[in-house]
Amino acid sequence: MTQAPLSNVPNTAGRFGPFGGVYVPETLVAALNQLETEYTRAKADPAFQLDLNNLLGTFVGRPTALFAARALTDHARSLSKSGEAAHIWLKREDLCHSGAHKINNTLGQALLTKRMGKPRIIAETGAGQHGVATATAAAHLGLSCEVYMGSEDARRQRLNVVRMELLGAKVITVDSGSKTLKDATNEAMRDWMASVDNTHYCLGSVVGPHPFPMIVRDLQTIIGVEAKHQCLGAFGALPNAVVACVGGGSNAAGIFYPFIDDHAVALIGVEAGGAGPLLGQHAAPLCCGEPGVLHGSLSYVLQDPAGQTADVHSCSAGLDYPGVGPEHAFWKDTGRVSYTSVTDDEALDAFTLISQREGIIPALESAHAIAHAVHLAATMRAGQHLLVNLSGRGDKDVDEAHRLIEARKP
Image 1 (tube, rainbow, N blue to C red):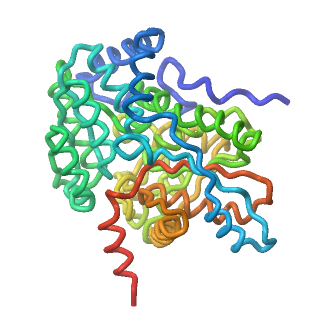
Image 2: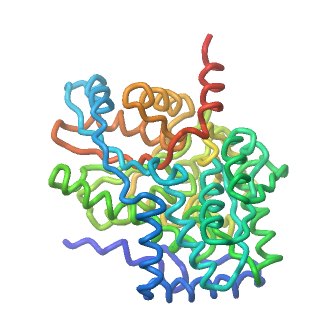
């Protein structure tokens, strides 16, 4: 029996099945409607598409490489009971200008900001890569830029704070709550409510009210579109499995979506298992959360028994978020995508493994995907192919990873 396509979402109400929607104050509804209208026009405008594609090619450096990770494959083979393992391939988003996949989204949204005639752009950031990418796009396209960042994340990601400021952005540190991504997002939303007439909020992931989850997904699908073409060229088939880390979920949505109706391709999202399974020790809403409303949409959210958004933990600032994009919730409930989690220790081990075996220092976010992918490949057959989205590079994480690795030594 033919399976119904899962790619024809969201509907006109911004729903991915029961998830998504628009849960915002009335002051933001007009701005969201304006954004959706302008985005619909831009998608049909050859001039917009040409501008964006030119920037992706000449400024970002796309297409990014598909890399045969032979040393990781050998390591997976050494873990396998059968002595066989799938070939591991990396989609090298770490090679993008500014160091991660985030620039694919921020350039598109910055162009939309200019089309709407707004001179100012704001953003939230956890790991700092979205902040750097927003600041980069703003500098290149002549927009004023302010970035909200939790003070704990600013400590962990000091290099990216310096990069944002060098690019001309104002970094506003947030000391409320857990001082991480959730709190930075809260403050950015408050700013937008007060400045909506002249400001666009460049949301960094596939979260938030409609049309943001759709727009960010669409702008990131260049990852999966390229990867499909590259896999067919490299080994003459689609991969047997695709693995990506999931925080808010933009890099995973970007690589999964072009494969979503290719049901022979297994899709696996990897959340932050943190320090353990108890609430507050991890950041795995798809594995451990319940449906709830956070930052303007209905999705899976980590909540305490009273229904309040829970504190979360991850060694990776970019995964340190209590919610997830509504399309991921939809994919989870339909069974199309499988979700699992990787602990801090497992991610740190993978961070060291790929650095020493492949000469690639990954973002700690991406290290979560690597950790699961190596063990998954060891359960697969020789001749099969596993694709991992290496969503960013690890310059920003070197100091924090070194601190955490040293702290584990006896």
